[in-house]
Length: 482
Image 1: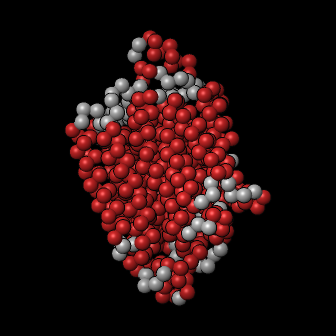
Image 2: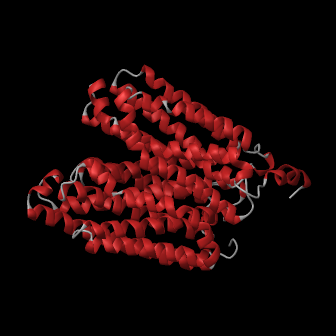
Image 3: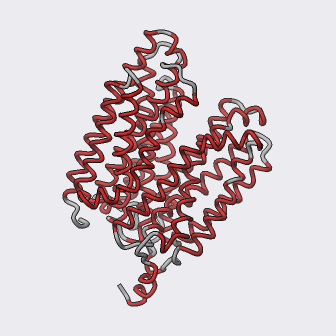
């Protein structure tokens, strides 16, 4: 490393979070908006339907359009950020995000709102890879990285827990458009904090290779089609032609992407880097995390409402142990990992997730206490894995690929979660003879649903356990990059 690089980098490496609090605040609110966006808007869907005369299909695309583009474009924008500058991309993305949300004031039709939500998804994908990539620019010490990562994600989790409630309160006093307009001052705050608190992009740390545009397009198409396939499976089932068409398209795009990345001189994703033990272990842990989150998110919500007859508000309260545990355990992850070491902390966290899944699968149908125990165990383990795997993946990559690595990390979890939802939805649909909403009307329907949830959760738990074992073995080889 040259003396010039040291002169640029040394002064910005902090010894505490307080020393760089504007930067941490800016990155936290960026992550907060990402976690809040769809959850807050979901509360307003009935109001939007009345105001814009939107159909059920319109409402689906208002949320799905955002999710598909947000999840599908992160890797592409991560690769671009590594080349043009992560801070620059973050500031451009936040500025466009603010403008896009402000344009909701001019929306008058469902089609306009769908298009606007798609645009917001694109701008959110521009900012997402930079959240952790810029965080890693601030610290050298791994314990501080874990502390900062834990704090940023905790802010997002608090927002996710409180978001629907806050959204409902806003709708009592303001039109639904206020929920999107509220993102504008948040984005402005993030721009100010990041501009002042994050060091400038160092040209010597940028990826100087040309961007593989064809590879980026194939990768984006693969992810979007995979996420869309999972959505269609849950909504329409495999009896419809649409999931099959989307699934075939995803497979063809994936094959084309792999072939392209292996042949091109400058791939978007270098598979040799992914094969590094630390990187591959972290990604496997994140995939296991996505599967576990899917099993609990789908099963618990439907069981509480459709089988036990809880109201939506009661079901939301019933899911609180998961959020509360994740928030409460965040400050202790750093100490936990520091005491046990990464190679022990990862498997222990994963074991807690698996134990929670097994408890829910085998005992969750009998009483809520078992569900609460399962949520606490699984969420505690997920919190450890979430922070540890992020640090592991980012530390295992060169500095000119941090944005791509962050995007790969987030996308892997999202795709795994979508696959888990599709698997669960397929098994449940195959077990039922009538509509999902009718399962609570008869003992036979409730029993069939519970058996299907047990089968699906056990199947996902088995895959999750296999990923964890493989990740632990890879991590044991990862004392240094391979």
